[in-house]
Structures are given as C-alpha cells and as structure tokens.
Length: 192
Image (cartoon, rainbow, N blue to C red):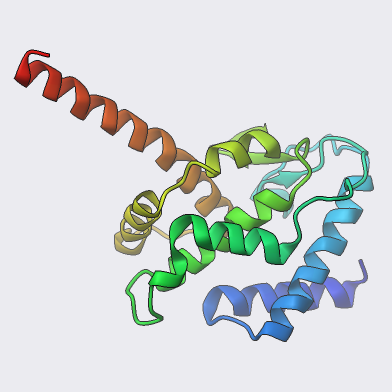
C-alpha cells in the first residue's frame, strides 16, 4: 500500500470509530482494508510478535498463503455480525450504540481474515479461524453486557480494536462459566 492509502485508511477508520462513515466511505475503507490484508497475506512472517507496540494492534500473518477465493466479503461479514448481535434493534441514541457498532466491525474483520492469520488475544497469538469460531458464539445478550461494562469502564484503551476483540472473546467464556455456576446452584438448591 502507498503511504497515501495507509493514511487515508487510518483517517477513515478513525472517523468510523468516532462518528461513523457514509456508505461510500465504508466501501472505500473496506477496499483499503482488503488491499492491506492481501499484502499481509503475502508477506513472510515477521520475527516480531504482533503487538500495539509495533503498530499491528495484534494482527500478524502466520503464513505466506494468499487469500482464498470465496472468503466472506466485508459487506457479508458486517451483515453477519450485525445480525448475530441484533445491532439493527438499537437506535443511534442507545447509550452503547457506538460500542456495539465497533464490536460489529471488529467481529467482521475477524470473519474476513485468513483462518491461519495470527491475532493477539489476551497477549497470546491465536489463529483467526479459532478466534472466529469463538466470536460466532457471541449473542446479543453477551454483546450488550460487554458494551455496558466497557461504557462504564474508566480506564483508557490504547488500541480499541484489539481491546474489543479480546473483550468479546473473553465474554463467551465468562458467560459459559456464569451459566455453569447458575446451573450448579439450581441443582444444589433443588436437589436435582
């Protein structure tokens, strides 16, 4: 990618995170992201781990394989994520609308990635295919709970995309643990 394309992608992404973008800007952003992904997929693996410190926000290519035909488009991935968490049920005035919007974009990005690409989750590099499988378990209830928690959080986030990716990934396991605890308590209380 040229420096101008990289700069434009960062501008659009920043605008998308802060205030939203038009359909035309979203399509331009998708084109730029896909172009960058294609370049990442053909680069050799870096010896540096993926991290915000080296500018990657937790994404690195794990192989030199090129993008496979038939992979989900940006529009398909966004639609899948929005449908998955019921995003269209929220109005722009909803307190967590912006966070839920960002969550959809982060989930969509993972759904579009090469399954063998590496993504940093909780400080560990994991294959995108495995992360996508976990994120596919995120429900509307989980997303809304995590969005409320993040909205009320007071600490500063340095790389929102990586933070949301880990937060959603973790929520699936936290939710399952909470359900197991409730089931165990009901079993104990009822003697079943």
